[in-house]
Length: 164
Length: 301
Image (tube, rainbow over all chains, first blue to last red; front, side):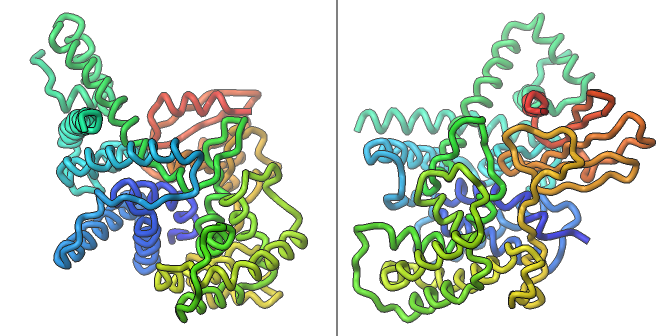
């Protein structure tokens, strides 16, 4: 029997962070994490970490599809409103940079982006493969492509921002 | 050997190849200049993309972390912050001077009521995290319960009339209000159930969330600056502490040399670092990269 309370303590922060990076929307990230843990209560998973993150990423995709049929933009570009941050000018610079990262991430394909975000949460190749339903042998190639694309896209966004 | 493709070079850099495969590639790049350049590029891309992704963090809404001590993660504060999200939001909005919009979403009002209905005894927890979210971090993580409860109730009274108007996301808040109320109860130690907190009414996983325990006295070693998520005695003797490093679980086993058997890891496919110390065998186990484990080892006190 899995202790969901322990799972929550172990994985909630990581899950919310991944969801926030994926969606760019903290409230939505919190809601999706809640929904994910609610599903874990209904069907306690055997291998919790890949399970939780796979469910969460599915929710993001479903959510995105629903949103796009309503004509709403995918939220990767979403600009977060002003928040309790350090100094205003510093906050502005940080927010600009976050927007740049989100634009760069949005240029990756879904699978590459997900693999990258899972790796950033400390997933090893086996766990990434299980979460995304890929062969383990494909993970190195996926990450190689994702990293290259992200770094190039980010540099390009930087150049565009300087130029404009 | 033939030239390794990018996938294998990244797998090498990620420490995901078998020792034999890794050695073969290492040997190859010694003699193959183009592949050496590609390996360097893989290392650069890994570091660079990690840094880029890390810029999308959750810092903006959190108060600055406690300074000094190198603390990266505070399970208690984060756990409570998550569980008291509504109270935090209400408090935060109320304390912002620029929110003076007139009130009256019934949904938001319900949210505020719901907050107010949270069990009194459970108040210290959300109050602590609320304060941490809007004010500089407190030095003492465990304030006295009674005064904190009074403070927090007073704070909520202030918060109520202003918080209701400032809720454009009232629907979401209302749905969270109920959850927050329940979670507040679940953060209360079980002994307080007698005070009227109906633990049986909580969903099972919420009822099981215990307040993060202080490291048990039987633990001889600890990781300095990190908080224990859970601990359990090991069957053959010794103790296992579970830490969370940026959300990744890390097991820290400490087994006396006299103990019969070495404990088994809880989950498969983990990296392990084990060494003897003061007639104990210490083991760190996690999916974190080996370098991270080595870094954690330096924190053992």
